[in-house]
Amino acid sequence: MSEPVIKETKEPKDAVDTNVALTIAERDHYKTLVDELTLELDAMTKKYEQANALIEEDSKAALITEIAPKWSGPKDALGMKTRVELEHMKKVLDYARVPAFKSGTPIVSIDRSPEAKLASAFDDFKNKTWGRNK
Image (cartoon, rainbow, N blue to C red; front, side, top):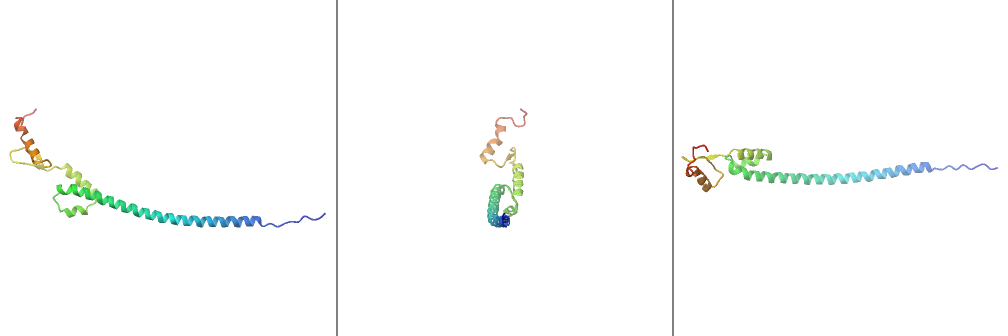
């Protein structure tokens, strides 16, 4: 009988080498993908920050236009305030209505037209209810 021939195969070593090569290639692919996504994320973050700054400036401008007629301080100082400070100032100025007083007439707020002030100032006298409890 002849002796069996033993073949030395390098298949397990070849398979390991192939798997290592595929893993390295896949890792390199993912590295490039991560780099591309990082660049895209940075660009989107920059656009987001620009949009937020624009919205902030628009809201500040709107608040300044509402506050400026009611505020007696320098108008340039309003531009230096933050949006939160301007919102607080607006709330305070909306709450604190400055009364107008004409001699002999009741106090009427200044945020109404002169005709409306005049008409309401003399309603009590016209109806003869001034100073009476209803």
